[in-house]
Every structure is written in C-alpha cells, then in structure tokens.
Amino acid sequence: MKHILLIDAHPDDARFSSALLAAYKKGAEEAGFKLSTLTIRDLHFELNLKYGYAKRVELEPDLLVAIDTLKACDHMVWFHPVWWGGLPALVKGFIDRTFLPSIMFDYNPEKLGGMGWDGYLEGKTGRIVATMDTPSILYRLLYSAPSVNQLRKTTLEFCGVKPVKVTQFAPVKDSKPETRERWVEKVYQLGLQGG
Image 1 (cartoon, rainbow, N blue to C red):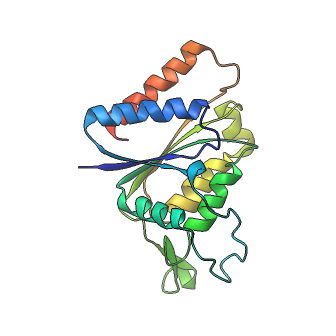
Image 2 (tube, rainbow, N blue to C red; image 1 turned 30 degrees about the vertical axis):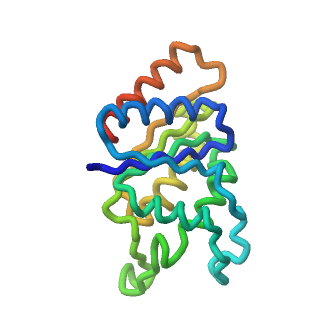
C-alpha cells in the first residue's frame, strides 16, 4: 500500500493551506492510502544551520523523527505558502537542518567529473501544493518560480525524489469563496489519486 506523507509547511495553522491539506487527506483516506503527517511548525529545533556543512550540529529529537518519517514514505506532499517569492524561513530552516550529507544525499566524486552526488530518497515521488498572491503565470515568467526551483529541483530532486509535480493556487488574496471551493476540490481529487 502506498504510504503518503503530508507535510504541513505553513507557519500558521489557520490559513488556506490547512484547508488544502485537509482536502487531500480526506481524498487519500477515502482511497485507502496509508497516511502520515509532518507538521513543521510543531517541531522543536534550531532553524539556523550555524556552521553549514563544516561542523555537524547535533540533531534535535524532533528532527530525527522527521528524517525517519521522510525516509519511510513513498510519496510526499508539501503544503506551503510562497512569501517574497520563496519558502517561509521555517521551511528553509527545516530543510537546512534535515537534508544533510550522509542523511539525504552524499557527494560522489565518481560522477559528473568529480562533482556528482547520490540522492538517498530515490524511489520516492513528490508533489508541492503552494499558495501565493502573485498570479502563477507572472510568478513563472517574471521571477522564474524561485520557490519551485528551490524545493523541487535543488532539494527534492537533488536528493532523488522524482518526479515532483507542482500545483499552485494564486492569487489567494481576495479570491472568491467559489474559487477556493474549486481549489479545495482539485486537491481532494489529487488525494483520491494519491498524486
């Protein structure tokens, strides 16, 4: 049975992302998928990767559990807002502290002329469900979708998660109730499909 991990990556639980996550969860439960939830805002950890990769900082218990949870799933779905074109600091800090060499990837000098790597999340798939106020087309054309590139390409795919599909809802600000209902229904359908 496919194991889906829902990652609640919004710093505030009273936002539209929560409704989207609940809709996906409902669909996935109805379809019979095995589900886990990881709520980043509830974890206790230091956001700052103080020394980069030069010196390993001890991982807090919540991060150790989160790493095991990420490794145990077959499919991960990230629910997050886009703020200032990118990921909220909470999400970036979580990634900095958990997506580490020897944990999620390792450099491999035998690949790409000495500049390669091995991703330890190979065999997993992913989806990003992002909300923002910038219209999606402008986000892509004017800004080259930086949060998508950061999370999908330079984090998840780098560590072996493929494919990673993206669903964006925008603009959320001033969106009409019927528009939000359509968005919730779309995510519910994704949950039914486990995609």
